[in-house]
Amino acid sequence: MTRLLPTILLLIVAALAVWGIAQTAATSRETELEQAYESIRRAVVTCYAIEGRYPQSYEYCKEHYGVRIDEEKYTVIYTVFASNLMPDVTILENE
Image 1 (cartoon, rainbow, N blue to C red):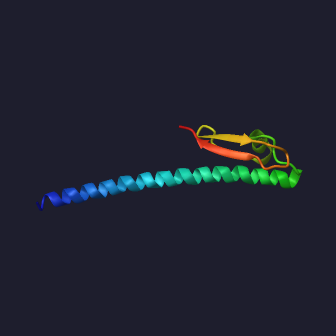
Image 2: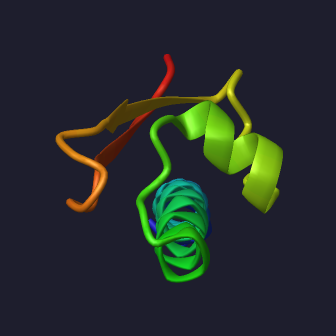
Image 3: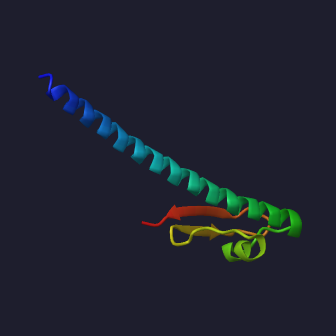
């Protein structure tokens, strides 16, 4: 029994380490996604403040306001309703 205890403790520590790494990775993905969204939102608001209208496309944000999103990792859905209404921005993680 005393020889089994260190093995059990080692397995518990290993399981906790794997769980911790998985949690850190999930948190990192969420943070990266939030930063991508905020980058686009800032560009949209800045464009409205400077030009008096919201950008008509995500491409316009990239070209004129320096938005850089890893498009291999994320898909940006940019939906415009009118030039005086803030566009709807959705960012999806590619699989």
